[in-house]
Amino acid sequence: MSSETFKNTYLPYHSKLYRRMVQNEEDVVQDQINLVTSLMQKLPEQQRLVMQLKHWDGYSDEEIEQMTGLNRGNIKVILSRVRRMIREQFIIWEQR
Image (cartoon, rainbow, N blue to C red):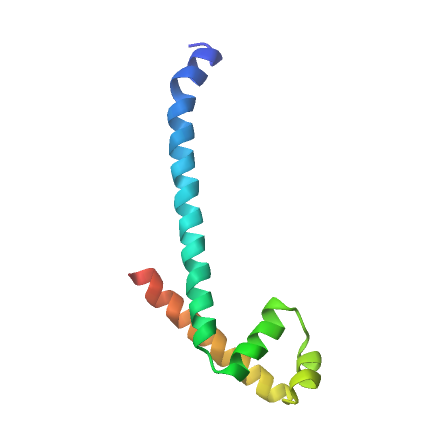
């Protein structure tokens, strides 16, 4: 079979399959984004602020300390608790 025959015979099917697979992955990623957004909205203000400053805005713990007045120990505890909660929710989400 020539390469042209192969492309004409198999590539269209492969392309459809590939597009479906990519779309499914994009849907999963969008669902994950929606889950994190929803979880962030439900956080108490202080936890939401610390997470946003650290992970979305890229501030260091020292900078967050200066902006919020929280000490570094409290910042680390907040981040640890929120990350754990998000991990637990992802496990529940994946099992559905």
